[in-house]
Amino acid sequence: MTSDRASWGALAQSDPVIRKRDADGGVEPSISTNVSSARTDDELGVKLQQNQDKLVWTMFGSSWCHHCHELFPSVYEISKRFPQQEFVVAQMDYMDHAVKGIKYTPTFRLYKKGRRMDEFVGTDAQRVEDHVWLWSDSNAGSH
Image 1 (cartoon, rainbow, N blue to C red):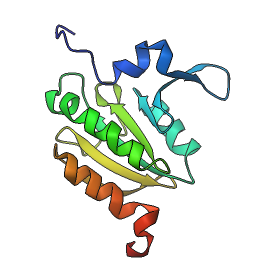
Image 2 (cartoon, helix red, strand yellow):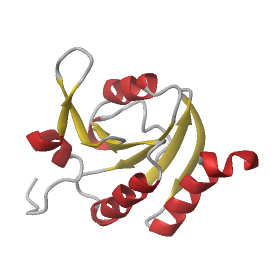
Image 3 (tube, helix red, strand yellow):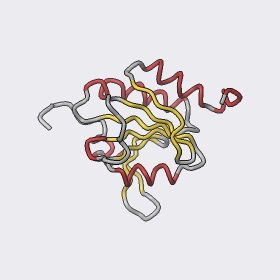
């Protein structure tokens, strides 16, 4: 990458302070307790499988997407307000299957029990928070 900006997905891949051990003892990229990254279809599949009992928001973006870089700090702050939900930053440059149908970045997809429940595109942090809130336990009666 020729950009001097660190890739938003690469942060979790490279910083040993924010990495945690997975169940097999390997290092799993983790940005916080409920935010992690996935670079491949397999990594995303594992995260969805591990979080069957939670809502999993996946932000599909790319290392070249400036909008994704700019939005990530807001998504991180939103994740702190909704700790019962999982957030995955998916580096779609390396994915084939999971990104089918995605035309724009960032694209957000919500998974529940491995099934896609919601999808939207955009860079408006308030819209992201609104979707997360709508699906949250505090608004459970609406879905």
